[in-house]
Amino acid sequence: MAASASNAIHRQLTRSERRALFHISLGCESARIIYRGFCAKYQKYNPFFRCTETGVAGTTQKEADEEMAGVGMAIARSGIRCLRLDFVRLLFLLLLVFLSFDRSFSSSEPDMGSARVVFQTSYGDIEFGFFPHVAPKTVEHIFKLVRLGCYNTNHFFRVDKGFVAQVADVVGGRTASMNEEQRLEAEKTIVGEFSSVKHVRGILSMGRYSDPDSASSSFSILLGDAPHLDGEYAIFGRVTKGDDTLKKLEELPTRREGIFVMIPELSTVKEKSLF
Image (cartoon, rainbow, N blue to C red):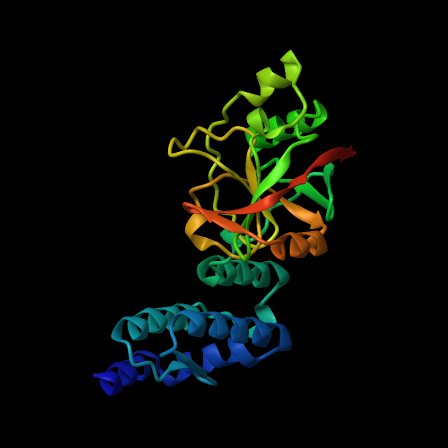
């Protein structure tokens, strides 16, 4: 099956067609780089595929044979030669390669806004920024809570090493009383703004109940990768400074209460905004 499938490619690509593909892929440095990048990316998703100087050959998957034979025929029959590969065609070919085979773009980290917030704890400062294009309503709500001073005298109530450090809901978590404006904002719930951004160390992710739109003011700082949370909890920012403080929090003694790993000594928060 594998041999016949591989031979089918060479029967479909004539000698002149393979030579044309060879000139395209190896005739100049820029085309050679593109060709190698194409091969490397295809091999990443299909380990049975390999490239030769005369094009595509040696696969052991019939589907891959047929697909790549079609690609090779299309390139060869186009009549393009290395000397005719102008700048626009190179850009177009690069675009096709990356759009077809690079699956990582959707999970790359989004742009961060310029605003910064610092939580001052008894173990050090933690600075973080926001992802306004990922979770605009969440960012607006959290930043307003910060501006109103709602997180002052609040605390981290949960530290699960390698998983999360969670800030308490400000309603009930603060030791200081709240004024009317603070309470009105703190009692709001935010629609769940779930995204493709991954839960990895340093990410800020909203806490919530079973209702996806029940997030309020409690949020977690990821202390490790947690792919099972992806798409289930709203990510709105990332720690920019203070990983040493997170490490100190992870070393605190803990006790388990149900599914939560709690710290007996509450780490109180004092906030400040950096604009």
